[in-house]
Length: 165
Image (cartoon, rainbow, N blue to C red; front, side):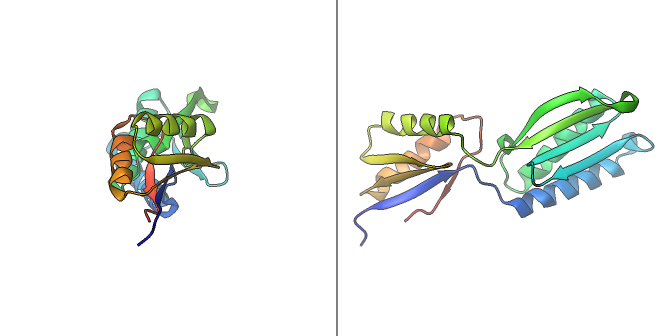
């Protein structure tokens, strides 16, 4: 039996599921009757971790973002993983929306997680390792309590638990 148990808290998302959600959202939008005959462009930039959506109005842009988020949710990707970062007018009177993919925990967010865990007064230690927070303890029950408490917190980024040992 192991003397120390641990798990990692990450914001990592399944890239294949995200691509599937993107492709399905594209299909859903292009098949809608209210998008027939108008500008409706989707672009996925994997390197910059962004989606760019271009359409004729703010209402249509909202529908495109909603379709993308709802398809992601259907694939167990948190809605917090997709953040609208910029909305601006584009050429031809169109609206351009940039949606950023959040798949890493920033150092400030990691500090918030560590603070929440310390406030629980459990016999666990949390440490920041890059964009991962490692939580270690002797009791699996304490680790499960920490997971339960972190899930209950409303962070503005996705939280996933991996490597429970």
